[in-house]
Amino acid sequence: MAEAVLSSGAELEAPGTRGVADDFSRDKQVFGVPWGKAMMWIFLLSDTFIFSCFLVSYMKVRITTTDPWPIPSEVFALSFGGEPIPLILIAIMTFILITSSGTMAMAVNMGYRKDRNKTFWLMVATAVLGASFVGMQAFEWTKLIVEEGVRPWGNPMGAAQFGASFFMITGFHGMHVSAGVIYLLVVAYRVKSGFYERRGGNYEIVEIAGLYWHFVDLVWVFIFAFFYLW
Image 1 (cartoon, one colour):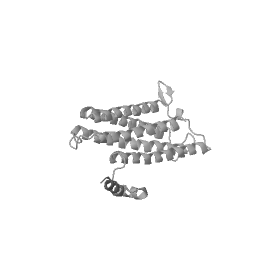
Image 2: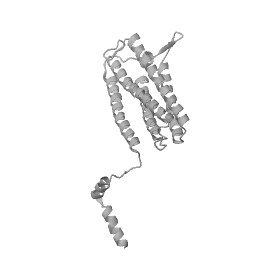
Image 3: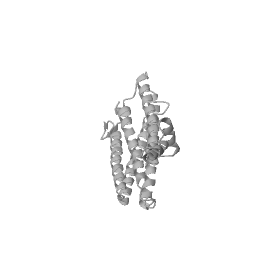
Image 4: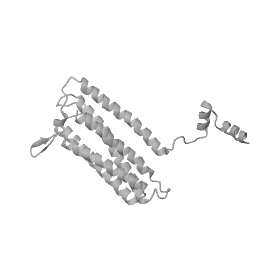
């Protein structure tokens, strides 16, 4: 009888490529990762390639251009009391975005504890911080365009590629932050309304939103290092 069981098992689990084909034909879940989280990781991986291409292209342009490149600490300085403070606005924006990562991490924690009220308010706080970041970025763009005369096709302070690189990289990132703010608010509303409670009490979507938000924050760290500090 044991031989029959073994022979039966051998038929079910065929060796080699036949076994792999059999596994896929049974529609088995190979890894214990939910589809929503897996798809978010795939999306973030593709986004990583895009941002990497942008930053590598920026570095190539920065190194190969023959025109003088504007000094970021001077271009992005703000005056307080008549004295320019280098990168003060960028430092505040970076602090806000890093702080939002902390509130998002706490929201994920509260989500898994099924604390709807705290999860909701922490996600709203994260969205407010993200919206503040976008607002400061809009102010930064306005200052460069109106006061400094920087355009995507020209730059009175030096290399013309400066404007194209700046607006492309920071604009693409700002679009991600804006989309993230909307995404967080939608999820927060559903948490508050009990939408996920009615679907079995699974708050995994909060973690998935957190993955996106942490990615956006991490990308900004690289933009800050390569564009503003270099």
